[in-house]
Amino acid sequence: QVQLVESGGGLVQPGGSLRLSCVASMRIFSISTMGWYRRAPGKQRELVAEIASGSSTNYADSVKGRFTISTDNAKNTVYLQMNSLKPEDTAVYYCKIRTVIGFDYWGQGTQVTVSS
Image: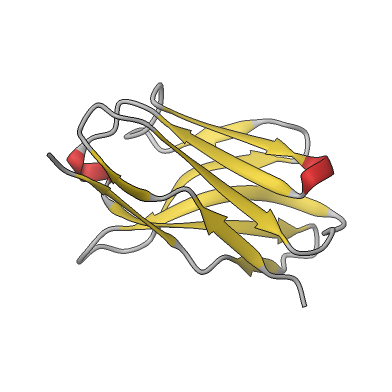
């Protein structure tokens, strides 16, 4: 059973940076996309960023220019570099890996809190 484990969350001041990592416990074949989602208190889960197998990327408008998604396929890892963090970025962040047949693997989430 493949497990995704996120890390790198925490408390940071506005304007600060964090780097989230998501490691898959096993090699996942036939990946379609790898992405990061978040759920803020009282809100629905939303896409933050995703990267396709061909390396094309897609970002939520609210994070464009501040967040960068990347992967290290040799390490079965997807990263989210978050710069210029704002209080409205506070949420639980989840990684997701989708296979070409549409099966989704989800991580357990990591809390990001942006506050002074």
